Image (tube, rainbow, N blue to C red; front, side, top):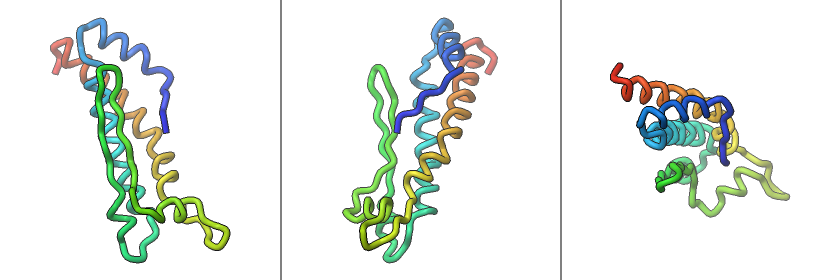
Length: 124
C-alpha cells in the first residue's frame, strides 16, 4: 500500500533547501509506522496455534530515492484468513492494521520533518 500525503511538500522543500536530509526523516517515520501496523496486525490476527500472529514481520529498505517498509507474513494460509474462502469467512487482520496506520504515518512524517528542520537550523 503506497501512501501519498498532501501538505508535506512544503516541509520537505524547506528541509531540502536548508541542507537537511528529507529521506532520513521519512525513513524514521516509515519504520515507526510499520512497527505500529505490525503490532496492530498481530493484535487482530486470528489465533489457533499462534503461528500466523508470530509470523507477521516488517522489512525496511532504503535506496537513494526512497525509504520503504513492508509489513508481511509468509504463512501459506494467511491470505485465506484475510480474505476468506468459499467455505470459510474472512478474518481480516492485515488490511485493517494498515488502514488504521495511514494517519499515523502522516503525523510521524510531519513530526520527523519538523524536528529535522529545527535540528538543521540549529534549534535542537
